[in-house]
Structures are given as structure tokens and as C-alpha cells.
Length: 78
Length: 355
Image 1: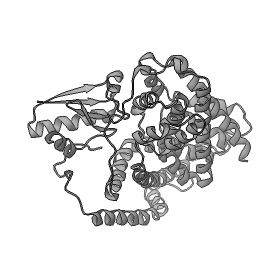
Image 2: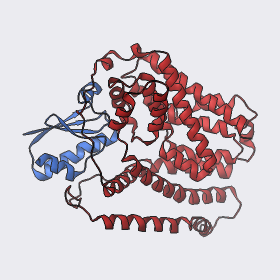
Image 3: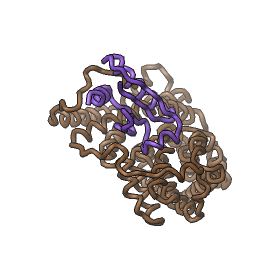
Image 4: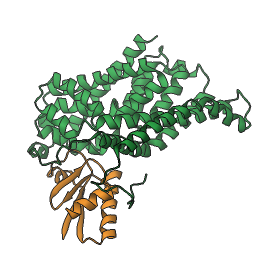
């Protein structure tokens, strides 16, 4: 079971990032928890400089842009 | 904007041949220039087809709109693509590392300069701010960056250059950087670190916890440019068309000398009035510049118009509400005050310099 977090203060691009992740999970039938972290203090605990950021199992994988479906897929299979 | 999942997306590892990318980009640039040369004839032809009588208010407005819309969108696409490629050399992490060791003074200059190139979206303002301060970038230097990044960005410079010429673009660049450097320096001198929200001072930066720096090939940089183009043009096109529509109305209907009295050089109070009007207005450079172009055509003074533009872009209420999470209200007041003073100075100076 993977734990995915999307860090972002609620801007449009953060919502896009969440949508991309959810679509990949649904399409590939991957079981994972998806949590949207919107509190700025909680976001800063990950030391990202730009949002949206994608955190997989507590590790920051992508920061500052919306990931593509292919990227999410390969990160989840890694 | 489509970020929906496309099964055709190239998976990492499978690489499109480099030659194909370079070829595509070259073909696109050639096509761009071929189309761009046809814009004046196109707008004349399209306006004539609508059966509008030449010289009427409506015809002037429609022709302005039909010419400016494709022109501005095409120029924007080109500028954003080129800047997207250039920006792939600058990441927020690298910028922070460059600024962390800098003292005030030179640090403010470097921060403002890097603000032009570092990818920046207003929703990242707070993480950037906290990340910079916690890594030991001085508060004033951080402010120089935060002021320069939205104000002197590639969209603003590209559009100013395209619509108003290189002299105005370069002067805007110089004065925008000047405001960011001086305002940041003043804030640094005031020693206001204790006005940060307490939790911000407790965040400790640890190196290497963010995603690492990637080494990119030229193709990846071209792709970065293409991604930036899709994302930025997708986000701002509606603003631009709205801006051009307002500009077209001004162009066609506002009498040529009307604005000379209100926004002209003679009216000294017009500069502060323009700054105050700009604060609650929230737009980005893309939406405001077509309006600027039309106002200038009607006798508004350059300094007044630029002060208005800087105020709309750099001082926005939504941004201050976001910054409230990390700054005390007093610090926000100082920030707004110092930046307003800088913009006022630029407005007055322009009105004196350009006659």
C-alpha cells in the first residue's frame, strides 16, 4: 500500500496534480492512499520551495509542476 | 488546458529522436514568422468582410481587436517558449543556493536579477519565502526576489517589447529591478525579522531534502519550453483577450485628448491615483499591457501608465492575504508601503524623463 500526498495551498495546478494522480491510480488499479496537504506549515515540513509537490511514501519526488501521468506511473512502479 | 491522462504520453526512458524535436521547433518558428507577416492584411480583410464602415468608432475598435488578439497571442507564445527553455537552467533550489551566501546590497541585486528567470507562480510565493528565509537568505534579499519575480517577468517584458518598443521595455526592466532592489534593501535595513510569524523562524532548512537537480539534455530543455508554453498560454489567454477587448474599446471610443487631462503629464496627482487604483485590481502583466497600449495612444503619460501597471501586478490584495500566513500585518504594511513608494518614484521619474 503506497501513501501519496499532494502538497499545495489549493491553487488550480495543485488540483490538477491531484487529478492526474487519481486517474493513474484508477486506470492501473493501484491501491494507495491519497492525501491533499493544504496547510502551509505541514507543507513546509517537507522543505519544498514550489508547489504543487508530489510525495510518495514520505519522499518528495516532484516539486513545482504538475506531474504527467507517465511520470506518476513510473514513480509508483519504482 | 488539458492535463488529462493521455496514454500516448512518452514514458520516461523512451526518447523521441533529437533531430525530430529540433526539426519540429525550426518548422514551427518558420510558420510563426510566415503567419505573423499576414496579420495586418488579415485584420483589414476580416474587418471589411464584417461590412463595417471605415473610420467609425465601432470599425476602429473591431480592427484593433482583430489585429491585436492574434498578434499578442503569437508574440506571447514565442516569448514564453524561449523563456521556458532559458528557465530550465534556473530552478528555485539553485537560486536559493546562490543567494544563501550573499550579503545585503549585492544580494539584493542578485535576487532581483534571478527573479526574472526563476520559475515562479504566485501560489508558490509562501513556500519560496519560507524556504529562502530558513536557508539563511536575508529577509531584505528575499523581498527583492519576491518583488522582482512577478513584476519583471518574461510575459511583461516580451509584451512591452512587442507592443511599445525596446526603449520602453528596457527602461521598464531597469526601473522594475530598481524598485525591487531598493525596496528589498530598505526592508533589510529596517531589521524586521522579529515581525515574521513565529513558526517561520522555527522551520529549519535541510539540504538535499527537496528533489535533486537534474542534468538536462537540449531536448529536455525544448520540452520544458513547450510545457511552459502550454501551461502559461493556457492560463493567461482569457486575461489577454479581456485586456485587448478593453483596449479596443478605449482605442475606438475614447476621444484622443480626453486622457491627456486626467492621465497626462500636467496632472501630478495622477501618479498616486494610478497606484491606489491598481492595488485592488488583480490582473497579470498579460491582461494589463494591451490596456496600457491603448491608454498611451490616447495621450496618457508614460510614467502614470507604468505606475498603474506596476501597481496592478506587484501589489495585489490576494497575494497579501496569502503572505499574511507568514508575515505579521505590520510587515505586510511595510512591504506595501515601500513598494508603493518605489512605484511612485518610477512614475514621476518617467513623466519627467520622457517628454
